[in-house]
Amino acid sequence: MDESCPLPNPPPLRRGGESTPSPASAGEGRGPRQSRGKGGGNAPLLTIRAIDLYERPVRFVKPFRFGSVTVEAAPQAFVRALVHVDGVGEAWGGTAEMMMPKWFDKRPDRSPDETVDGLRRSLHLARDAYRTEGGADTAFGHHAAAYGTQRAACRAAGLPDLTAAYGPALIDKAVLDGLLRALDTDVFSGMRANLAGIDARLTPDLAGFDLDGFLTGLRPRATVALRHTVGLLDQPEALRALLARERLTRFKIKLGGDPSADLARLAAIAGVLDAVAGNYRATLDGNEQYADAAALAAFVDGLEREPALAGFRGRLLYIEQPVARERALEAPLGAVAGRIPFIIDESDDGYDAFPRARAAGYRGVSSKSCKGLYKAVLNRARCEAWGAPHFVAAEDLTCQAGLAVQQDTALVALLGIADAERNGHQYGNGFDGAPEAEAFLAAHPGFYTRRDGVVRLATAGGSLPTETLAVPGFASAAQPRWDRLSPLQNE
Image 1 (spheres, rainbow, N blue to C red):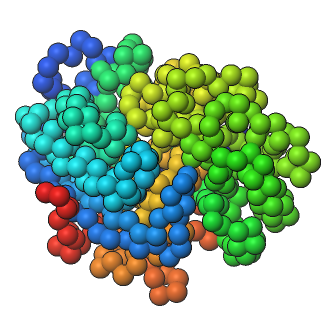
Image 2: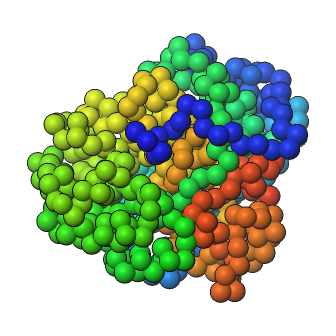
Image 3: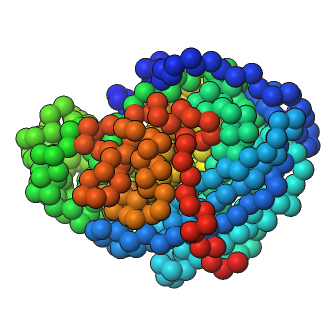
């Protein structure tokens, strides 16, 4: 696959005086361990003492269109969790993610506001599920214990499984942050030592796979290249102007689902990239817009036949989720799967999705923190177990400045993925006046900059440094102003 694949030996992240910490004392979690597979035996136990839910509005500086919806504003969710680590003490951990309308739930009978309310409901139900399980367990053990309860509760509430995954995804990040802060350990060292206690109980296909050995062998990347999103509303000339200011070499182009229109638009974009982007690489995002494998084959035929796309075709890495999630895993891709790699994104709604996608002809799956960090790690382990040509790609659902983009970038670096779609900085105006902006700028030099009077992601060089994320906790030495956030609605 090329640069987008997780590499077996990516450049290591170097930190002064780095050492891998010894895990806290081992202990058994609740329930039987015989089905857990290899991994997680020495992770510390923790109790979740509190989970607080907040939100804050984010207005975009330009419309964001994906699929059939155009978004100009959306709320950002924040989660704070207090964890007590046995024999160590307690600490608060936090995280954040956008609540994007009509992505987790694209059912036509649901309005954009209703789908955001579904994400709020997922968070409330997840908090109930983690509270119900209670007791002491590993960080991953809490996730595994609540997994079935959350899916059942969300299904009973009429929510799809992808929406159901959202609540636990945020709580897990906040719990991991608290665990690592209590242990005074950074996320790269902590995950390589499997302090979260990741095992194979939710991925029986990995039973017998050495998860501890796999995690120890990860070599976090020192930088993550930015893959710039060319949205459906973005014009080729705007891309040319951007490339005059920033050194970008990775691009993701959205598709609309009409082969002829997509090919014509792509030819115009490719003309700009071929002229000014140098040795670039690109991906395509179908956003579930193609009706079936036949329509997709017509697009790929044109992609291979059109002379204006010859250079672009040689630089194309993969196509992401071209077919609607309801059909993507039910019907094989067929012959088109042998012509170019395809990955799933919206279809990745549970631990069984990647194996099902593999059987249907897909080679890869997206990593997104809003879908679950543990699933991303275990899917990366599957790639190790299955071998080439399987891979994990890194995509971004408008991660905003602060905890969201830092934690997702750290996850990408941990998994050894060379580049990640980054689009939150395009649509959000950096910290946009958030009271914690200066603290994040001071705490993470090189990751943020000040431009036009606003603290924002430092994108001009085309990549993000990850050494600055190697701090105690989950990738952040600064925190939101929790006292300035509003409680999550629909309590």
